[in-house]
Length: 612
Image (cartoon, rainbow, N blue to C red; front, top):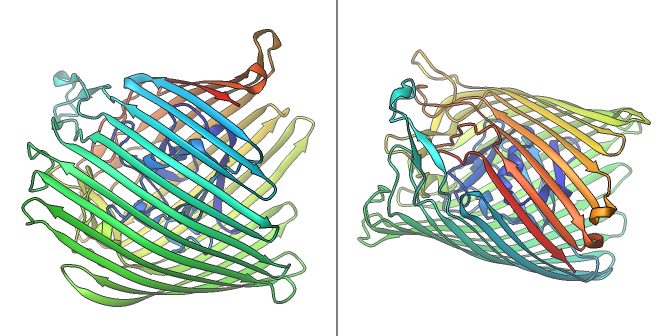
């Protein structure tokens, strides 16, 4: 989508030891990442004042958002199997839907071009360890990639317990995190079949098993609560090119996620010792693009899905059965002029039939979006405007995790959004290198906006904000110097407000930082034949996030935090051995996330991989 605010991550940034998808996305412009602790904790991403449930996350065209929480858990995404990550802020391509709310994230898997095999080991701070192996094959007619990986950590890092008196350092005590261990075993199978140049078929299969402790917040750590997660994901995507005038993409997928909570000491407030939450979704999509006339394009997107969320307890008191069936029709038309100006108009109707313990209802939800792109030489002026109506997901209504609880009383959200941007490519070119920048301003007004707040029991729950608006600006710049050094920086300013509150005092929305800033440098080092180093890279990255409120009144504050990291990557033995080292939080900053959970301090990770 040429008019959307977006960024792309690829290459070495996906291969750092101990790096999670959440940590990767934290360095992207405008992306707010919420984590519930160290490795293995629930991690989600959101942009522009939206919630994580409003951001579709897709892997090879298959939606990863599950119905237990309504979000995509980024800690389950396998960076080691990816070739590219595309991040859209605010507006996204038609196949992502919805538009104008929370953008989208597309994870694209690697596709082997020939025979390959690799195996590697990793180790790191706080008991982190990993092992993986993969084998692949491919040619001009298709390819396949199979991989298995184990990753785990004790997460026994130390943190400062302030006893609930953040303004009195006299009672601060250093404690060690406990019952926060996590271990994950997952396997992936990817295949691309392309017997003809105009048809591609992608097959995806995934099985995952994770066991972890549910540590709780710093002031009230849990001692015995455990969580086991199982996930099965299968999908097929086809892409057909009908000459120069037509493109058709179809997809079918199945996702099943089960979370089993074991709470023998009743530390999680579940009301029972054991609780099982199961979410399932079957989905089918079709996207057709036709070029019927010069510089014109017609698009149609069809989506049908059935989702179900079931919660069972030993006593059956808290049992919940909910389901939703939906069909979506989206149509779009775009037209370009000889001057290069291009505009588009897209509209959609979403028919949803929902059955929950509170109601059985059928709703029609409309959406509309208009876009404009005006070229200015190598640069472009971009504009988007959209309206939407959104039903809460089943996960937002009844979902459950270690840190999040659903709210059955949530109502529909409706709103308007707009953004205006300028993108400059090759802003300056010379023998020294090149530079570029992009800047966007955006606004959003909503009625019954879905936001989150922390409860007195320590977890967070969604609620409707009667009237709200979010204003913001995003700026990113990059420069490549002498072909060896890449510099990137970004800043996001936001002013998220509850405009309908009748009470005086704080009007800032919970869990929304007013400033996100990132800076990074990547340096391609010269080869060192004497040491057998054929290629090496050094990277330094810093991210800063200002303080946030955890409740609507502004009484609970999550402090500002920063993270300085360094990475070194080297290839030995003619490219057959890769060694990597990554250090994080070098300044040992105190960091917290959504429910006041302390995040790890200074840490070191290393890995070695043999490439065949």
